[in-house]
Length: 526
Image (tube, rainbow, N blue to C red; front, top):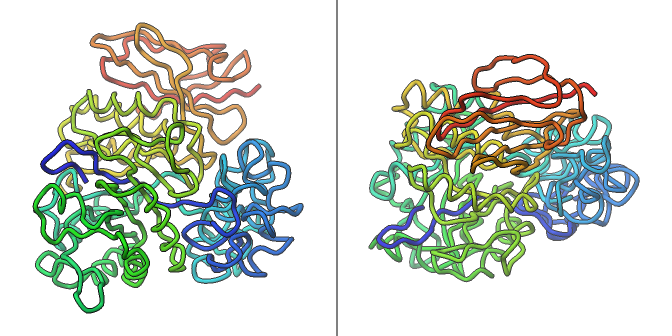
């Protein structure tokens, strides 16, 4: 959420977390291997992580010859045995192809081999079965990563790619949040094509709660806002084929409880186990956990509580208030092993300066990003006040940075252009690429920037020509700057949905408009 009466950063990121080292700390959902995630943490039960399918001891990635030895499955030798942030690596093969740098969702990224839900190998319990275990994104190959009956058909990693969804705060804040709005947004996911484009989370921010029950200590739902109760709202969202998220804090009060005078705004401090189980019982799929003057050490407490529920819940945290902000390069807690996603900077606003501020903050943080664990530069403001050119650039940059695509607008009242921006499947594919690399700046000229993101497929790159200036500019991307071999390569404009043809050694876009991005996909046949 945003700061209410003071400029504190409050929007929490999104879940997850795995375990830095795989084994018992495996993610919120079920050890690896598809097993019941509280067990072993590395392969789950015997069907989820034995030597042949999911790895035994070391964290989901598995130590034996399957599931990612010698760096197979993860990035630079992770994914395999070492650490467990992504789903127990993927059962039997965790990403064997391309050993050093291949296994996107399948063996984990840096420091990740077993963070997610249910590991690959076999379905195991309810957390590792069809719902989260499986082939794509982390299940490995057919033989051991998720054939029918052994892991399902979807990803085994919680947050194998950056989450896509909607959050209530930017548009509806505290007073506007209610059951009718949530159902209306869920309906709009379907009718606008957002669901078909990949969006799935319908997330409620602060002000859904109303204190605690005096006898049981359980958190209560605000009955005037949600008369049917939260479980019924979750059922409605799930009935649309979507997922639902809630908000809390590692403090006794939420941010509106602290700063906004919302008397019902109670946080989860000292109630983590009870609240986590309550969320699981309601059918919650995502938790946004906002620091709000809480203690950083409490983020791990909630992580552990979520894991114990046995339900795969994406865990997004905001480890900063007004600042300084924690990032993977500067934090006293290990963000990568605690959460699936973490906010890196103070709240976004619907203006260009806020967008560029967050982009600049995220530039050096690519080291922490990968399947199951993502940097979060906050929600999207597309459709909330930026002009259409800036909205398209904003969306492009979040995609190339492998950021969460969590919209903050009224989905039921989008303009045609806003809808077109948010549902561009080719740009979304850049964000959702299973390799999980965060893009970075590879060249600059007069303040303008060339960004490149390594993509799945041989010699494939996404490129953003980002004009930050006040006038039009001619911008060039050189193959040598983006790690492609010299010679011809095909270039496609993703916003124009047009193949521009083969070019040799470089491509120049003339008259790139101010505050805009030319988004390209470049593939070399060499």
